[in-house]
Image 1 (tube, rainbow, N blue to C red):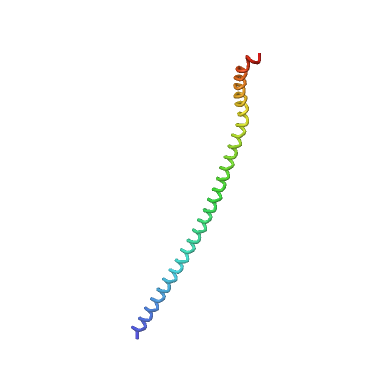
Image 2: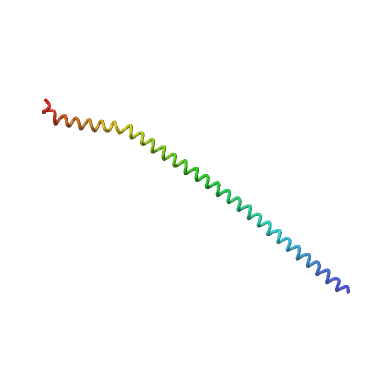
Length: 104
């Protein structure tokens, strides 16, 4: 009888130990799942921030290119008349040389 009682208590201790291990494994799995969820949320936030920063960088680049184009356009509008006058001046001077004797 003593042996049977000892066997039952061993079986009960073994069952409790097994149950405790399963509970520990389930708790560990839940902890890992929580860490994975938190990591996924952090990665999603970082991706969103990166997308916003890329959009801001592209916008700044486009504005800088448009400002450069408008600056160059203004420079061309200022410089072009001087070049045209110089070109017309040499053309008119050459025409005056050709027509000069006949106009006198």
